[in-house]
Image (cartoon, rainbow, N blue to C red; front, side, top):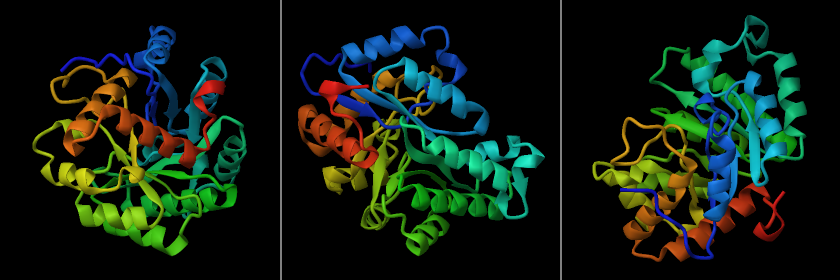
Amino acid sequence: MSVEKNTDSHGFVDSHCHFDFAVFDKHRLDLWSLCRENNIQHLLIPGVHPDQWKTSYELTRALAGVKFAVGVHPWWIAKLDDKHLNIKGLSPSLLRQLGRNSQRASCVAIGECGADKTIATNFELQLMILEQHIHCACETDLPIIIHVRQSQNETLRLLTRFKPARGGVIHGFTGSLHLARQYWALGFYLGVGGSITYARANKTREALAKMPLESLLLETDAPDMPLQGFQGAPNSPLKIINIARALADLRHETIENIARQTTENAHQLFNLTPANSLT
């Protein structure tokens, strides 16, 4: 599978791309120009650690159509300084910093945050920090980007308890149709990435084929989450077109319809500027 070339008028939004990571440093400007040539209208850089929030914000000022979010990814909790943590999770000073950054005009979400049982970081600490992010999303009236790995029940309990009004997205959704419907009922979109290109992901593929298209967002998670056939190489936001094609094939729909509706979904969730007036 090669990168699809977009020669039509339909556009795309990569709703989750770590475009601030060093792997893109040498060719970031050229790559984003190529993305825009292929009508990739917006790209959202999720937050992972306070040290990268400023960098992400500066990229949004330099690259039209790029937005960012602020949050602490569960994998990065272990990299926080002692001053950033206490027995309740994130320290008050870091929470204030999170809140200040969320007020920037190009910040469109809280996260990436979540809970992951596959890592060594204390799981109860992860849940406390996820709860803090949910409170921040409620206070700032922003959607939230959630990372879930082997923690579906705990995540659902927190979302059901606090019910963030703006909802959010379950990043890199993998799971059953029943689980997908539970998240959608809570106001959470499902992030569709490269996992659907793998035949072994039968349960997820079936769920995403049956869910309303209005519930789905496209994402690459670049430079991670490579598509089938591209393992071992950094992923790229250009692959959003491949993912759209794979989803279209899975759902027996046109790529134009996939692009139109998923872009509309992203605009609605993240309050993005229309394509004809990108900033």
